[in-house]
Image (cartoon, rainbow, N blue to C red; front, side, top):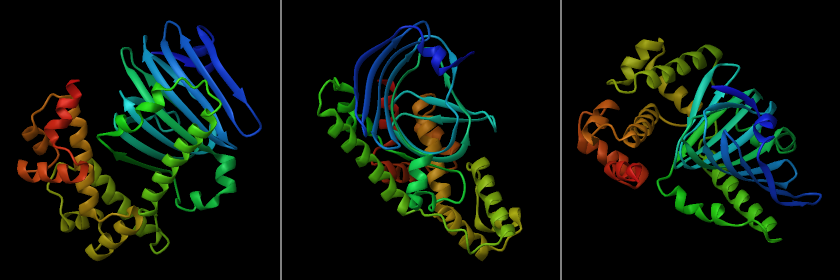
Length: 313
């Protein structure tokens, strides 16, 4: 893939359609059409150190887009169409943000690139609280002791935010609209995170290391028959401390975490439309298709086969 900086990517075919600036609000509506992309974008600073990007991007040619380095940020991404792929340049870890997912991410010392694949048409919203905002609002970073990533899957996400992509953004009322939409998303995410506040102060360093090892094992072997006794032996930590420590670190029981992980993997496999529902249920560790379908419907309020149908559209 061709490596491109943001400035290099935008220097050809960029047209500013509308611009508005004041002390506490900035809005820029632009189109970029060149050999790499056909991009419609709304960039806004809706108040000091809170930024909103509304992106509709058709990838004409595969390329890697290097993003601006950041010391610290809290980001919320809402993917309404397509898949967004990002590469952490320090760890070489690739992360995929998928359709109908809200992702929440807190990181320090960020060096990242977007991996843009030819033929992808991506629509997404990104909200960023930058390092200055985080310093002024310490309650956010108090929620995390280290880099943090979480996502929520919502099958009807596209319909909830359809209007955001259909507006012209030529009105003086856009300031109110964009601020309200942004704060609505931030409030929703924080309410969800309040349920999952990470508490690790009661565990010693060795306990934390062993509990994290258990989480890694679950993520690598989620399709196997994983039990508490098995995990306890794998990480050499007694069952009581393992269960209590896992709940304190990751705000879910081991059973809840394994179940959620399996269902998230199931969504990915179903959307590929290469496997039957029965095959997917076995691939993610369910021996009974009925139990899988019940668990899936309970979590996402939709049937597995309906996810496959939507992927056909």
